[in-house]
Image 1: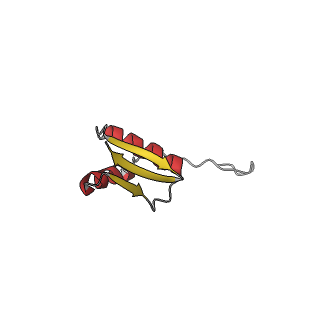
Image 2: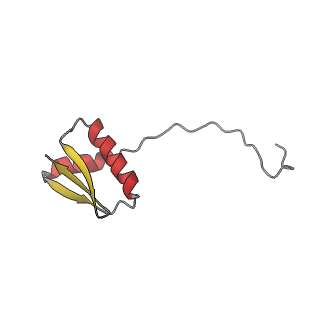
Image 3: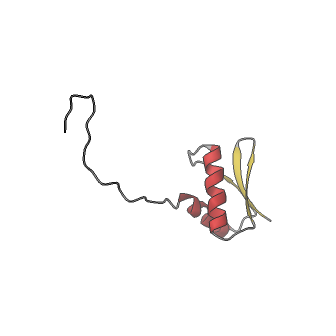
Length: 80
């Protein structure tokens, strides 16, 4: 390909999208723990991203009793 424009176009197919089950693993671990409330810590995710991912994973798992709550910048999972 021509390089005289300051960029190059390289023929390559788009990789298949790989969904992560990171949030589902957290939900599953919470269910297995048997606890009524836990702090989700050490994920290195932004709080808004973590909350959204956990809410979607809880909904996808069919567990309407699991709530994702944020208090003072911390993210918690709790059951009714």
